[in-house]
Length: 73
Picture: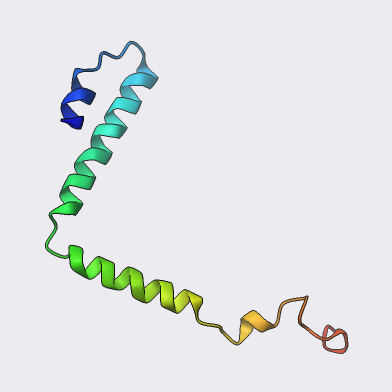
């Protein structure tokens, strides 16, 4: 229904037509993504990425606030 409303909405300027087309493209992308055969894998990858980014790294402790003054030269 959302797509039909977008298509049926009259546009009166180039920018409005451009926005309408972008919204239609996004709508189509979301519909395609929702039925994609690899959808379940994307959730697993997103969870893995979130955990990976939360994990501390060796370089994250070497920020100016935590680096000793004698080691800043």
